[in-house]
Amino acid sequence: MKKKTLLAGFALLGALALTATGCASDSDATGDAGAGGDDDGVVTVGFAQTGSESGWRSANTESMKEAFSADNGFELIFNAADNDTAAQIAAVRDFINQGVDAIVIAPIVEDGWDDVLQEAADAGIPVVLEDRTVSASDDLYASWVGLDFEKEGVMAGEWAAETFGDTPTKMVVLEGTTGSAPANDRASGFDEAVKDTAIEKIDSQTGDFTRDGGKTVMEGFLQKYGVDGIDLVYAHNDDMALGAIEAIEAAGAEPGVDIQIVSIDAVKDGMQALVDGKINFIVECNPLLGDLAAGLVLDVLDGKEVEKEVYVEDQTFTQEQAAEVIDSRPY
Ligand code: GYE
Image (cartoon, rainbow, N blue to C red; front, side, top):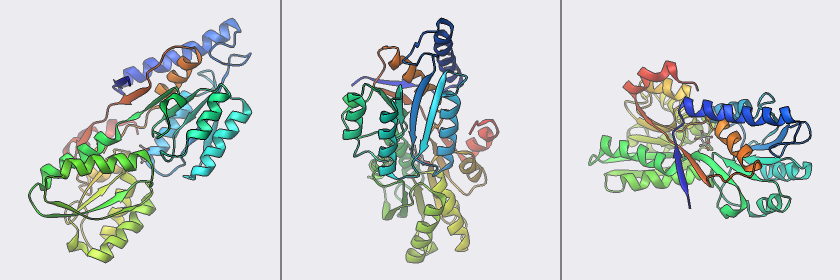
């Protein structure tokens, strides 16, 4: 399978934004339906978002709405499924019945997509996936744009391996949504990176990528093992880490000192906690995928050949690095 890594620099995103605008106005100028659009040149896209579970998700939704805007020649039909997999599949079926020009999906979980993707293919409606991946055959969708979740897990694990190494370390894990690609891949990537260390995973439970979920699960861990029985928290996203911070502080301990925390996303609140010393290390997961997704949709509708997988590069932040960049981050 062809793989392509793209840097999510602003220049690149800007260029794609221009491409999207350019295509849309071409259609307008000629009065032609253009890229799969209807008579007025408007491209109707149904977007099935996961929900609104995290700061990452808010930034991603904003990026998608900006890219698929009326100014850029789109009519966006937005659906947020509130993390309900059946509701998300129903939303996609609805888009098919409405006869949209293209469908974009951020799949909540990896499995269960074969039938509805086949239905979209039968109806001749191209599908572009953004953010999370699916286990269905890649013949059933045109392209996917997102992040390398396995690599994110590896980078978080490498930090833990370097920080704790041979020191016996009790770790608890706050997992993302069960069955989601980022929860699966961030777990396996991390486990692989720490396998030769003295880090012991004493417990692991889902906090569903939410702040409340992270807090509740962490409260349970603290009750079970005590503050002294936990050295390290690996949170699959910043929001759960922020919930864990509340639980650790309520238990009378100091997050980032008594219990170290590593998480993934690098959203504003997470970065602030990193600067404040309450989180120890963050691996970025860039949510600004809107322009790339919109560019792919237009290319697919124009009949151009597109990459099956478009990876956006992530970076990592120590507390010192976070302090340097926090004011200039767009999300
Ligand atoms: O890390 C988390 C969100 O799918 C990459 O979903 C995304 C993840 C992100 O809820 O905060």
